[in-house]
Length: 345
Image (tube, rainbow, N blue to C red; front, top):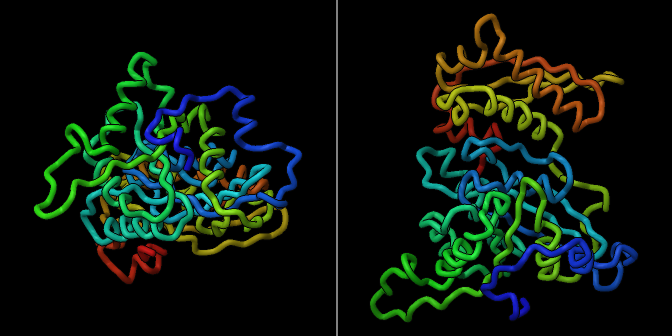
């Protein structure tokens, strides 16, 4: 990691600088000096990891929502530049779990840390560093991989406040101020962490090209792991289920979203049209009523929104039929979680 970047707030470069960081467009896709590897996106819930992932690959591969803990699976997205291929792992937000599902989501996120070549810690850079961020920093302290810190939501930052906000994150990495804490008896003070800070906006894309260049520079040299035009290795049925769940998150009240899972029961490709039958699982009858809505209007709205997203992703007409099923306590059932793919791996 270049010493000049340690602990510094890296400015958003102009397009010419970004092009330099990403390498010449004429460089052979997987020739000498090409880099490839895995990058884990780690952070608190709702800091914009999925939005950043979609911004980097240029299309929708992860669902987004203002609701915290939207991401439940460790999703892989693929970004190929002239000089590198980054396999980006979107992980569930690290939080204090309140049920077995929450425990498995946090286990999934923590498990990604030891399996990658580079870690990207994403924080809400429009706010000062908080104790939740500090908790994740301590998780990453002994990580063998290089760690970068992305200060997201830079588009919301008053330029006059940018340096003060960045300074709070430097204090966190250096263990100063409110983040110092007592040193355990018999142990040396924890050394400061020299992780570079990158201001970005997952929403507008500002700063993301420079971020990609910095991440790619820390990957090992190696060949492409996926075809150059690939953007995800996510199974189609998992993406279908997530697109339906995204619409539930967008249209239902606060009591419903975290209690919802989606199962794809059947997919039939009959030529020009793909038919999808899916079941939305909830924990209580009252939640089922909310999802269906008066005269079935809510379920129709959810289905229409999901169908339109599927048609964009799969480039063709989709017929979608939704059912709602009450499964009490599914978030606390190990067997049911395994059926739905939430194994905490």
